[in-house]
Length: 199
Image 1 (spheres, rainbow, N blue to C red):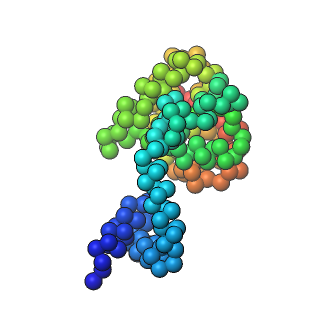
Image 2: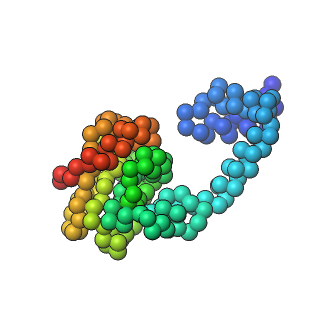
Image 3: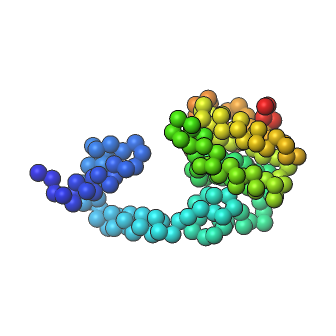
């Protein structure tokens, strides 16, 4: 019979995406058998991050400060605003080194079947940001999924009256693909060859 604490540890690992009971059990036993120090470091890092990491007041990315370092940087091109679904997408684009504009993180996509509407992904905040900062171009870098395309179309319609160019990531991102899993070269090409978004 399994110890209640070990079962609790295994169940905790199961909350991670793609981790089933067998993988969670392997992780738990590995830490207990071979690397208890790493387990303590992991628990401390998790506790500190859960307590201190929030959303940037401007772009909604994760940060422990009120405003993230990208939004505060004077080196960023404020005329380019890239709209992404998640903080992982910001990380993926930044890793290419090819984009010097700013970001807005939706924290999801429109999904009426799941009850996720425009207010749930911060579209009011996005519109207000565009009105205040007046970028010359908004790049719709939502994922190339059905939900991502629907979200991009909704945003394009919402911003149609603004005096700006609306573009979409170009070829290179496969249909059904998610940005965080795409290699840097492909993502960099998609950014450099972006095209106007057709409504």
